[in-house]
Image 1: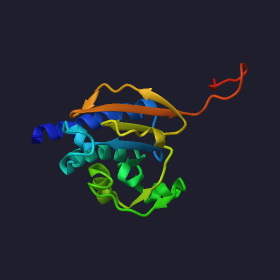
Image 2: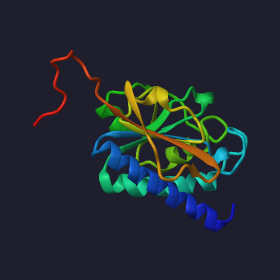
Image 3: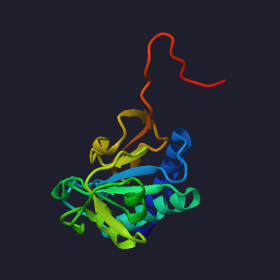
Length: 185
C-alpha cells in the first residue's frame, strides 16, 4: 500500500467510528471493542500478513475520535492469545475486569493489538469484556466481547482497505410482558 492509501485507511476508520458513536450514543467512560485484521485490510488472508504501518493508521483514526469523547477502546487480540483484549488499566479497574499475563506481539496477538499495547497510556490485557459497541474490520469475530443484546449498525463505508466492516451497538434487554413500558415521556 502506498502512503495515500494508508492515510485513506485512517480517514475511513475515523468516519465509521464517528457513525457508530452517533448511532450507539456512546458516552465518556463506555467501551468500544475493536477487532482488526491488518492482513485483511491489505487484501491478504487473516493472520498471514500483519502490517504495523496499517495498525498505526487505524490507531490514529480511532484515537482521534476516542480522545474527543472520552470512551475506552478495547483492542481484541487474535486467537493465539484467546482473543484477550488490550485496554487502559483505568478501564480494567473501573469495570473490574480480569487481567491476564501476556504481552501481545504481531505473531501472537496481532499487529493491531500489539500496536495498541505499545501506544496506550497504561495498557493491560484482560480476558473478556462486555463492550457497549464494536467495530470488526476483517471478520475477526468480536461478538463474544459485546453485551448480550447486539444490534447491527450499517456503516456508510463497507470496507476499510480490502477488509469488510461489521459494526454493532448494544442495548439493554427488553423485559416484562404486554404491560411493560420501554421509554419515558
